[in-house]
Length: 98
Image 1 (cartoon, rainbow, N blue to C red):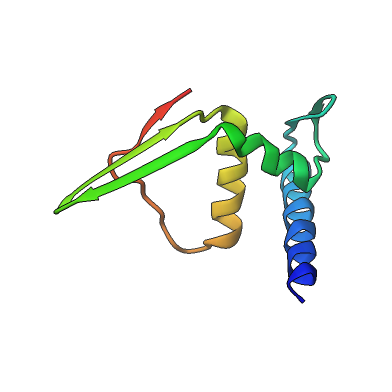
Image 2 (image 1 turned 30 degrees about the vertical axis):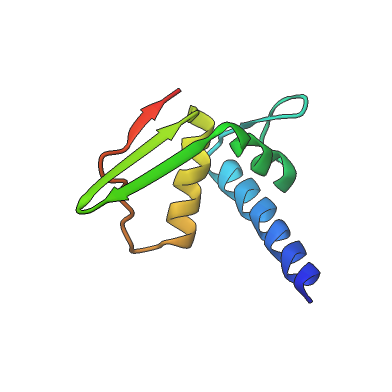
């Protein structure tokens, strides 16, 4: 059962990213250069270099985000618009380092 859910999530990621890229005339880095039809494995592999550290000490919160490039923001823009419609996600104090 868990494998079936995993395959469905994998398929959903691939389908929705491809649809978003096609409708917005965008491309992502793939195995052989830029592509408008990446596999879910390629999309997930793009994020291996991204690190997010969130520290909460007492009432202080610090967020550090590193390794982000423009294609990451493109996929995140798609993800937030698709999955979190109507909600606003804010990284308080986040700093981007590429």
